[in-house]
Image 1 (tube, rainbow, N blue to C red):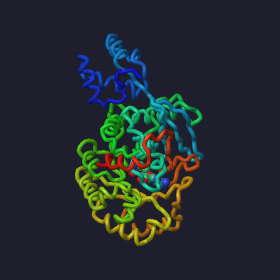
Image 2 (cartoon, protein in one colour):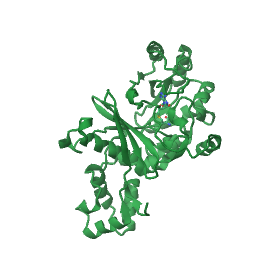
Image 3 (cartoon, helix red, strand yellow):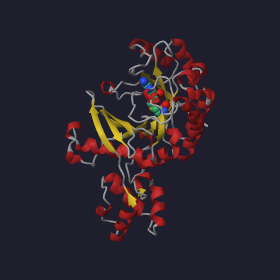
Image 4 (spheres, rainbow, N blue to C red):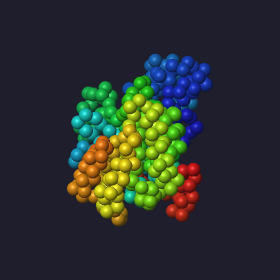
Length: 374
Ligand code: SAH
């Protein structure tokens, strides 16, 4: 790849700097954002409100490098999963989940993941690398484009980009977004910028396995909706399921969540809790969980475990999930159970695996994680 700047990696302030360095006015950034994200125009020569010399300069100094969709699968329930090939041959997955009142895109932040949560398919792939901001925001662009142009996905081409299908983004695909903070924040700025996709901060959710310094940094730099993968009500069990807990145990994690809520107006944290039969789904776990969360502004999202081949865990029965949720509700915890979507195409939570070479050996990964979480 040549050394030109990929403008998809820059949010508005990055673009302003880029234009200033070229001797241009900062408002060029807003013009460019509108062409790229609102009109889906990729060629500089078509950007008619930029001067001709500037368009020529951009052709020499910049590019808009989008990754490529190499496969698309649509589930019976309308969920769509794309395999996206990056410039280095690595592949990531992106999932679209339509509901009557919204269209949610589940976006990946890393190729693989270094955190090794014991029940997650992505963890099995190991960690390869961080996505750059362009590779993150491209997932939103590619999804909007496919959904508004592909008749196989029910597109009505006359609405092309007038009404963008993606109304909500959740950073819940492959990877730990808080271990790729700068790129994730630049991409989320683009999701929320009025000159770009213009989503409100309530419609952009970042999910973390509980990286406390990352939560504090996010609070200062980009206050989107926060989801935390809790999955267990005590440190002993949580450290088994989510090894990051050994570094940031529950008390420290909940303190950071409280700080996050205090800063935002009426912000509530969502705690995700994967329901694993016989592991974390007992009534005593529900009571412990309710006790922990009594004074945190939150809601609990129970996620029925999605199995995949070779994994020893089982999904809790619907009855058990209902009892667990009732137990929480009786203790004044707001709780919802996530509907399983797209499991016929392995697009459900925790089933995303992508396709890439794990260049890190398993034994080396332990030390990599220590680097990653320190
Ligand atoms: N690393 C971030 C982003 C991943 S989000 C995080 O941990 O939050 C994906 C969500 O799905 C997380 O809550 C994750 O714990 C959960 N998950 C992972 N594997 C799953 C599985 N097999 N079934 C259901 N949920 C799973």
